[in-house]
Amino acid sequence: MTRFLRPLCARLSARAIVLFTCLVTGVQARWTGCAPQATQRIYFANHASHGDFVLIWTALPQALRRTARPVAGADYWQAGRLRRFIARDVFDAVLIDRERQACGPDPIEPMACALGNGQSLILFPEGTRNTGDAPLLPFKSGLYRLARRHPKVDLVPVWLANLNRVLPKGEVLPVPLLCSVTFGAPLRLLAEESKEAFLTRAQAALRALTPAATEGAPS
Image (tube, rainbow, N blue to C red; front, side):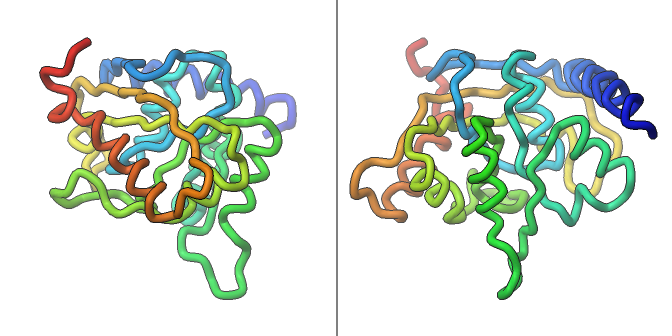
């Protein structure tokens, strides 16, 4: 693929992915805690499917998609030419090694570098897909470390509803089902806030966006 043809294919693929995602999920973006503004942010969400970042990316206005980079596992998205093309050229994803080796690179560095360049991130602080009954798995420390290094970047909790039923683990073909993406109020690391306190607060903010928590809440 030539250097001139690749960008065109990437743009066409992005449009096709957005259209397909909208058709399959009927995705509804609910901005309950903030507005879709061109502000540098870390969108942190629950994680139950390989399609999670695609749904968030689709729910963002087109202008925000250009600078919102999903963080994804290199082991999955570098397995095969098609996946590499989608991750690198379509989504400009930040690919990290989820299992850090003792002498390997720090996975925080490429994320911090993207933030340093003024880009936003789509991040899943659970670190792996949640296939159990608990609403959320314990958060990894990455969100806290990024908040410390970039304290002026807004951290926006995002709850994805139903996508785990559209694309269950191990399945290839999606099942059409309405999904929603709820964007909550931004957080920032407080002065002298410990890692444990911050991660507990961030997890609570995300859990507060679940359909069960928001049912009956004032609009």
